[in-house]
Structures are given as C-alpha cells and as structure tokens.
Length: 382
Ligand SMILES: Cc1cc2nc3c(=O)[nH]c(=O)nc-3n(C[C@H](O)[C@H](O)[C@H](O)COP(=O)(O)OP(=O)(O)OC[C@H]3O[C@@H](n4cnc5c(N)ncnc54)[C@H](O)[C@@H]3O)c2cc1C
Image 1 (cartoon, rainbow, N blue to C red):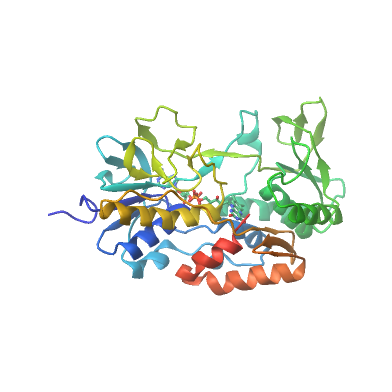
Image 2 (image 1 turned 45 degrees about the vertical axis):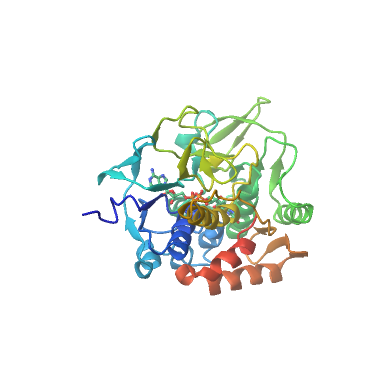
C-alpha cells in the first residue's frame, strides 16, 4: 500500500526555509487531499530577518526560531528531519542521508543559499557568516569578549555593505557601545545599491552616527586570523571579521544538472525547472532569466503560495500562471531601537518604525499563522 512517503500523489518539499515552509503550508491549504512531506535537517525554522534582534537580545530564540514540530504538528504535514543528498530528476526519486531513497509525485526544491567566498583565501577559516543560530552565538561571544577587554583601537570588520552588512554594522556598534570600532568594507562605490533612496540615506546617517568606518571601492584579497588585506596593497588589523559579501545556491547532487552545483537552477516564470514540469524551484536557489526576482524572504514566501496555485492548476490539467511578484516595499533594521521602512506609499524611520516592526512581528510570529504571510510580505521586505 502507498504511504504518504511513497504515493505518486505526494508533494515532496526539500528545504524548510521561507520558500519551502510556505510552499508546504500553502499546498496543504489549497490541496488538502495531497500528502505533503517536508524534508529539512534543522529542527527549527529560522526567521532570518530577525537574526539581528536575536543577536542584540531584543528578541528571544523561541520567537525567531520556532520548532518545526510545533509549526507542523497540527497541520498534517509530514516532516522528515533529514538532508537530501541526491536527486534523480528523470527517475523522480531522491536520496536522503538517513532514510534512503524516496519517490515523489511533484517536487519543490527550496534549499536556499550558503556563504560565497568568491575564492578569496582565508574566508572559510577566519571569517564568520551571519546566517544561522551558530553565527549568532559566535558573534555574541565576540561582543562579550571585546566588551570585557575594552581596548579602543580594536576593530571588527564586516565585508559587504548590502542589507546584511549595514544592518549588522548598526546593531553591533550599538551592542559594543564603544568597546571596538566597526569597519564596513565594500567593493562597490556605495552602500545598499538596490535599496530605496530614503532607506539608503537613513542607513548612511545611522552608520555615521555610530562612527562606523566605511571603506568603499575596496576589494578584499585575503583574510587572515588578525588582518584583512585589500587589493590596493593595504590591510586592516581585526579582532573579528564577518563575511556578508554574497551567497551561492546550496544544492544536493542533481542529475541531470548541466549548469553545475554552484549555479542557481534555471527556472521558467511559473517557477518550474526548465524541462522538468513536475519540479518547482522557489526561493533563492533558483533563477529565472526572463524575470530575475530579488533573493528575499518576501519573494520566497509569495513563491510558496504560487507553487500551490500552480499545482492546483496542474491538478485541473491547466497550465500554471507566471509568478507575479507583489513588491510591498523595503524595511531595514538600523541598530537597537531604530529602523527604516518604505513601501505602500509610506516612508518612516526611527523609533516608531522600529516599534511597528517589532510589535507586528511579536503579534504575528507565534505559530506562524496564515496572517503572517500577508504581514510578512510587508514586514520582511527588503
Ligand atoms: C541575516 C539575514 C537577514 C535577512 N533579512 C531579510 C529581510 O529583512 N527581508 C527579506 O525579505 N529577506 C531577508 N533575508 C533574505 C531571506 O532570509 C532569504 O531570501 C530567504 O531566507 C530565502 O528563502 P529560501 O527558502 O530560498 O532559503 P532559506 O530560508 O535559506 O532555506 C533553505 C532551507 O533549506 C534547507 N536545506 C539546505 N540544503 C538542504 C538539503 N540538502 N536537504 C534538505 N534541506 C536542505 C536549509 O536547512 C534551510 O532551512 C535575510 C537573510 C539573512 C541571512
């Protein structure tokens, strides 16, 4: 007899981040008759946009990282705590590290991204990222240590002045409270190149207020335990370095995969993998050349719902609609008690923006209610 794990009706979702979890929830809601299996090795969903608040202690881990058991138990979605190691697209079968092979009817591949060191020597050995709970623990320990030592010339370097680098620089500067100087290093000629100008200006002012030292047009060539080297031959001593310069897809071994393991998977506008109509790739690990949506939680969540709609259409032998991204604006955390937001005709910065963000998160996060999807579209936007 077919079990939910082996039935041809089963929708298997690989990866329980924003795209995978929201796909699983939406498929279960729209197509309750189809079994859904979510394969995810971590035991907690990670709400990455709130990692800064977890770092500073403004929020607690149960708010930022709710357990999958708690999120899924009442929803009839089967969670397999495992990691997918290989996928055979033609045989419609995948292999996991602990449970062996598993067939699928429709596959949602949402394994996200990981740190990309762009081949710069020393990054893997001497830099930390800012993507998960281990990174938060590591940075907290660094801040505690630097606060104990309080040597004014101490430097913390952050590489990459996109949203993560800028938001982290502000939060760390507030936490360190003068115990070390933050240096933000950026290869391009400005911060937040893809952000709304209001947010960019507010962020620049926030960095200046915190005396963050900005190095623009500065490419990193090498990272050492205590120093980072630049292309112009200069270097900067550091007591801790955080790499937020970019990411690349985290993919299991996929056959066939002509683009190779380090490239995003090519998808069409309806989010299906080219030439594989029963494989969807929402979130950061796919790329649609006709419409390169930004790699954000806002997009990933909306794509989760789009996957469910597409499966619904296919079950009625209709063609899925192209995914339409509803851009609801951008919101950035700028240090303790400070934020900026633009969108839906509003621009707002400062403590009120921070309070709105925090209050809405706190009312929406527990249980990851369906309301989170609409609130999240606004709140988690970049
Ligand atoms: C610090 C930080 C702050 C951010 N802030 C914002 C923000 O304010 N607004 C915004 O819109 N976006 C923000 N983002 C970006 C946003 O978090 C990502 O765009 C979003 O998480 C992408 O969703 P995803 O599902 O594609 O990938 P992820 O959320 O990374 O999820 C991928 C999941 O797949 C799992 N996985 C990986 N490999 C396997 C495997 N082989 N088998 C099974 N499971 C696997 C992983 O464990 C993970 O749970 C932020 C990102 C970071 C790092």
